[in-house]
Image (cartoon, rainbow, N blue to C red; front, side, top):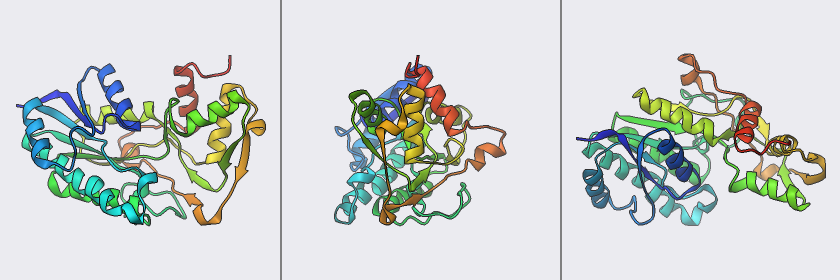
Length: 281
């Protein structure tokens, strides 16, 4: 009999997986994390592991990253992001667990005229987005007991762009920031808090967990620096490139309909940096 308090996280060593493990443990769950040693491409081993630990929830963070997915690597991306998601869903099914599929705003076109909500049909236009969309469909077709979560520009302070921006400022270096790529930055704190709430309420379906508003990469970097006490203009170098311009703004309509208010991206960033002790003294 699966135990709702036991959470199995695949891809536990990744950018999102590691934070999910840490925050869920903090919230009182017993977390079992796996990574490359238990490939999501091996369904029999996944099912045997699920039978062994009897999780009540499986959070699938395993995947080939966006920056590692090209036309030449798309076969591997589909193997992991699509078939792998199905394999994890099948393993969850064997023990009656809920699967939480970590997805992305990349399932939509990278150039949208207006914000999109959970009821808008995705039309990905990149190999990565297409593989993540296929993963969502595989999970939906495998089990009704699923939560699919899309977000955008997830950040924490210890890797990725956030760390690069802060390192550049501290070391007196310049940092190039795009003024023509737009989304809504979302902290890992907000993301995981709402993921846990969905799990505890036994929700099912597709959710956008994303801060409110819209920012360019430049806007986001400038606000980080401002909150940290640096002069953005002394660090940032604005950049544009029409070929790779993006505008993908998610709306959290499912959460709004049940009366949940998500923070603006500025308030979310301020609260995150305050909690991490990164605000200017």
